[in-house]
Amino acid sequence: LLFKGFIGLTGLKWSLVGIYAIIGVSLGLYLRFLGEWHIRFNPTILKVPLLKEMANYALFGILGSIGSIIAFRIDTIMITSLIGALDSGVYNIANYIANVIEIPFGAVVVILTPILAGALARNAKQEIEDYYKKGSINLMVLGLLFYLLAVTCMDDLFRITARYDQLIKGKEVVWCLGLSKVIAMSFGISVSIRV
Image (cartoon, rainbow, N blue to C red; front, side, top):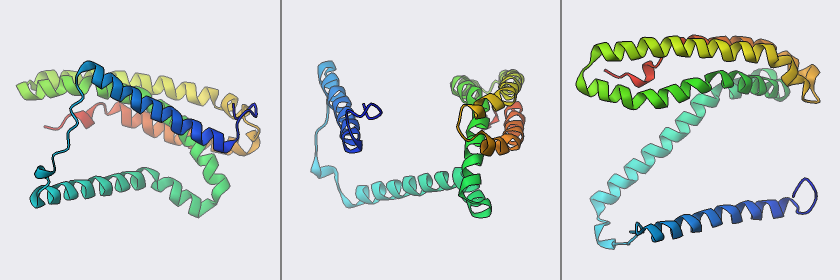
């Protein structure tokens, strides 16, 4: 609607707010329909020790979120300060292309984490080792496949844009970051194994 000119930028903002409001109300009505709407405010439970614990937990969550955002964006901040905003944009686009390589890793970790948790609870070390080896091999193969797809299709991806001459400078970024992601994936599901 914005693209066709039926609504302006303000209309788009209010439309997004309206969509989320409809989703929230619909979820509330659905909870009521299921009989699972149990929101009751009891001010007697808000005592000083509980409030202090809630504040500590909230502060820890906020600081953790800030640290996570900084940790995963520090490369962009450093590159922008070193080479400028335009080349930083080229880097970010190339980085997004390289991040596609990691998509199978997230799916495999989500699938194997509960299985590994059960094996850890049973202390089945041989089973954990088998999952680790199979996960590493499969992730390495998938990573190499996605890496080859990204590298071979990179020119076509950059040609879609109007700034091909500028974006092609990000080719080496995709090669290097993509290869690093393949190497990390070949180490397998070690993030899920905490013995």
